[in-house]
Amino acid sequence: MPDYTNAQKDYAKYRLERSKEDLNAARLLFDNKNYRIANNRAYYCIFHALRSVLVLENFDSSKHSGVIAEFRRKYIKMGIFPAKMSKMIGAAFTIRNASDYDDMFIASKSDTEEQIANAEYIYTEICRYVNEILTE
Picture (cartoon, rainbow, N blue to C red):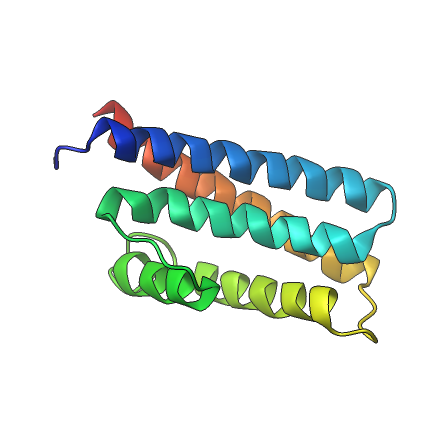
Protein backbone atom coordinates (compact mmCIF):
# COMPACT_ATOMS: atom_id res chain seq x y z
CA MET A 1 0.00 0.00 0.00
CA PRO A 2 1.34 3.45 -0.83
CA ASP A 3 2.06 5.79 2.02
CA TYR A 4 -0.42 8.63 1.81
CA THR A 5 0.38 11.91 3.48
CA ASN A 6 -1.92 13.26 6.14
CA ALA A 7 -2.79 16.06 3.73
CA GLN A 8 -3.88 13.56 1.05
CA LYS A 9 -6.01 11.67 3.56
CA ASP A 10 -7.56 14.88 4.89
CA TYR A 11 -8.34 16.15 1.39
CA ALA A 12 -9.87 12.82 0.40
CA LYS A 13 -12.12 12.84 3.48
CA TYR A 14 -13.02 16.50 3.03
CA ARG A 15 -13.94 16.00 -0.62
CA LEU A 16 -16.12 13.03 0.28
CA GLU A 17 -17.88 15.22 2.85
CA ARG A 18 -18.48 17.87 0.18
CA SER A 19 -19.75 15.17 -2.15
CA LYS A 20 -22.23 13.96 0.48
CA GLU A 21 -23.41 17.53 1.16
CA ASP A 22 -24.04 18.03 -2.55
CA LEU A 23 -25.96 14.75 -2.74
CA ASN A 24 -28.12 15.76 0.20
CA ALA A 25 -28.72 19.17 -1.38
CA ALA A 26 -29.70 17.52 -4.68
CA ARG A 27 -32.29 15.43 -2.86
CA LEU A 28 -33.75 18.45 -1.05
CA LEU A 29 -33.90 20.47 -4.24
CA PHE A 30 -35.54 17.56 -6.05
CA ASP A 31 -38.15 17.23 -3.30
CA ASN A 32 -38.91 20.94 -3.76
CA LYS A 33 -39.21 20.50 -7.55
CA ASN A 34 -36.07 22.55 -8.26
CA TYR A 35 -34.86 20.09 -10.88
CA ARG A 36 -32.42 22.35 -12.71
CA ILE A 37 -30.48 23.15 -9.54
CA ALA A 38 -30.77 19.56 -8.30
CA ASN A 39 -28.95 18.46 -11.47
CA ASN A 40 -26.16 20.89 -10.65
CA ARG A 41 -25.76 19.51 -7.12
CA ALA A 42 -25.92 15.88 -8.35
CA TYR A 43 -23.08 16.65 -10.75
CA TYR A 44 -21.00 18.30 -8.03
CA CYS A 45 -21.55 15.27 -5.81
CA ILE A 46 -19.89 13.23 -8.54
CA PHE A 47 -17.17 15.80 -9.23
CA HIS A 48 -16.06 16.03 -5.59
CA ALA A 49 -16.14 12.24 -5.25
CA LEU A 50 -13.85 11.91 -8.26
CA ARG A 51 -11.48 14.48 -6.78
CA SER A 52 -11.44 12.58 -3.46
CA VAL A 53 -9.91 9.59 -5.22
CA LEU A 54 -7.58 11.57 -7.45
CA VAL A 55 -5.99 13.42 -4.54
CA LEU A 56 -4.56 10.05 -3.50
CA GLU A 57 -2.73 10.08 -6.84
CA ASN A 58 -1.54 13.67 -6.28
CA PHE A 59 -3.71 14.76 -9.20
CA ASP A 60 -5.96 17.77 -9.51
CA SER A 61 -7.02 19.97 -12.38
CA SER A 62 -8.61 23.37 -12.69
CA LYS A 63 -10.75 21.96 -15.51
CA HIS A 64 -13.63 19.62 -14.89
CA SER A 65 -12.83 17.79 -18.13
CA GLY A 66 -9.32 17.14 -16.81
CA VAL A 67 -10.62 15.59 -13.60
CA ILE A 68 -13.07 13.42 -15.52
CA ALA A 69 -10.48 12.31 -18.09
CA GLU A 70 -7.95 11.37 -15.43
CA PHE A 71 -10.51 9.44 -13.40
CA ARG A 72 -11.59 7.53 -16.51
CA ARG A 73 -7.98 6.80 -17.46
CA LYS A 74 -6.78 5.76 -14.02
CA TYR A 75 -9.82 4.07 -12.53
CA ILE A 76 -12.31 3.05 -15.19
CA LYS A 77 -9.94 1.88 -17.95
CA MET A 78 -7.93 0.00 -15.33
CA GLY A 79 -11.10 -1.79 -14.15
CA ILE A 80 -11.10 -0.42 -10.62
CA PHE A 81 -14.60 0.99 -11.15
CA PRO A 82 -17.23 -0.33 -13.58
CA ALA A 83 -17.38 1.10 -17.10
CA LYS A 84 -20.99 2.17 -16.62
CA MET A 85 -19.73 4.91 -14.32
CA SER A 86 -18.12 6.60 -17.31
CA LYS A 87 -21.49 7.08 -19.01
CA MET A 88 -23.03 8.32 -15.77
CA ILE A 89 -20.26 10.87 -15.32
CA GLY A 90 -20.55 12.04 -18.93
CA ALA A 91 -24.32 12.42 -18.69
CA ALA A 92 -24.05 14.34 -15.42
CA PHE A 93 -21.48 16.70 -16.94
CA THR A 94 -23.64 17.32 -20.02
CA ILE A 95 -26.84 17.87 -18.06
CA ARG A 96 -25.10 20.12 -15.53
CA ASN A 97 -23.75 22.27 -18.35
CA ALA A 98 -27.18 22.48 -19.95
CA SER A 99 -28.82 23.23 -16.61
CA ASP A 100 -26.34 25.98 -15.83
CA TYR A 101 -25.77 27.60 -19.22
CA ASP A 102 -28.63 26.83 -21.60
CA ASP A 103 -31.43 29.33 -21.05
CA MET A 104 -33.91 27.05 -22.78
CA PHE A 105 -33.02 23.83 -20.93
CA ILE A 106 -35.90 22.38 -18.95
CA ALA A 107 -34.88 19.73 -16.46
CA SER A 108 -37.43 16.96 -16.21
CA LYS A 109 -38.35 15.19 -13.01
CA SER A 110 -37.41 11.77 -14.41
CA ASP A 111 -34.04 12.92 -15.78
CA THR A 112 -33.21 14.62 -12.50
CA GLU A 113 -34.24 11.57 -10.52
CA GLU A 114 -31.88 9.49 -12.66
CA GLN A 115 -29.02 11.95 -12.16
CA ILE A 116 -29.47 11.84 -8.40
CA ALA A 117 -29.57 8.03 -8.42
CA ASN A 118 -26.37 7.97 -10.51
CA ALA A 119 -24.69 10.45 -8.17
CA GLU A 120 -25.64 8.32 -5.19
CA TYR A 121 -24.26 5.20 -6.86
CA ILE A 122 -20.96 6.88 -7.76
CA TYR A 123 -20.65 8.46 -4.32
CA THR A 124 -21.26 5.10 -2.61
CA GLU A 125 -18.75 3.24 -4.78
CA ILE A 126 -16.03 5.86 -4.40
CA CYS A 127 -16.67 6.27 -0.70
CA ARG A 128 -16.28 2.51 -0.19
CA TYR A 129 -13.04 2.50 -2.21
CA VAL A 130 -11.50 5.52 -0.45
CA ASN A 131 -12.47 4.27 2.99
CA GLU A 132 -10.91 0.86 2.27
CA ILE A 133 -7.69 2.51 1.18
CA LEU A 134 -7.53 4.84 4.16
CA THR A 135 -8.19 2.08 6.70
CA GLU A 136 -5.65 -0.43 5.33
